[in-house]
Length: 283
Ligand code: FES
Image 1 (cartoon, helix red, strand yellow):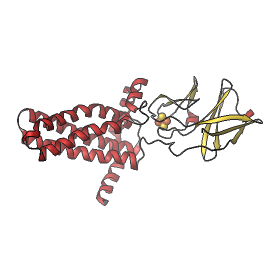
Image 2 (cartoon, helix red, strand yellow):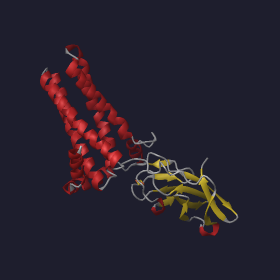
Image 3 (cartoon, protein in one colour):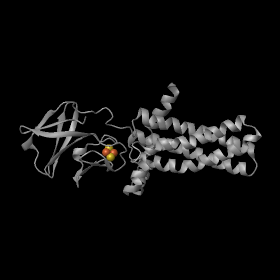
Image 4 (tube, protein in one colour):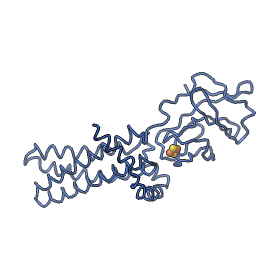
């Protein structure tokens, strides 16, 4: 276990990767910038990131192919080949969603993501070769390549888990932010000019208040995607756009207009009582 920690720690600190990672991430960001592409690859309509959902397909298909290769006998050969091909086909959209997510990372997470992607690319290449050898009737070589591919993919999967569970990539940064249960005074009404916005504390959360068209809206200030400060973003057309990666949320209810966020922004109730703006969590 200590050896694995040392290896992963070494990847996190491997700054030589930045020379490749920085320009590639910038190119991927440009490629995925159109809103429909961004929303599709980010899983915006699903309510959580698409990449972890898709990874089940190649890993599941390839691991079942390995079981059939090892214990299935001749009768299982067609099914094993089909599973290998299915995994290769499913790996393409899986990689696309992963690249999209990775392009928003920085520092240690970006470096680990590069090695994660490299391991999975090696796995995909080995499985593609495995399928080609199977088609030519060279089954022993095909099986060996497949097992090697499974090893690469499992190593990549381990790093993917490290990205999410140890480095917190693409976890909902507002999961534990509920807002005050009772109406809570946050600001004098005169402190929020028409068309203006203010950042205020409310209980143990920070809230972005916006007065737009006479209405006061209140969103949690911490972007659900990766924790960007919404008060530094752009407010227009009834929405706020995060300054970090461009997620756009409707002010009235926090729903997502544009990813990469896949979890809506917490929206709080707001009212004016005796000249004071108050907010509370939505029931
Ligand atoms: S932190 Fe990524 S869009 Fe807000």
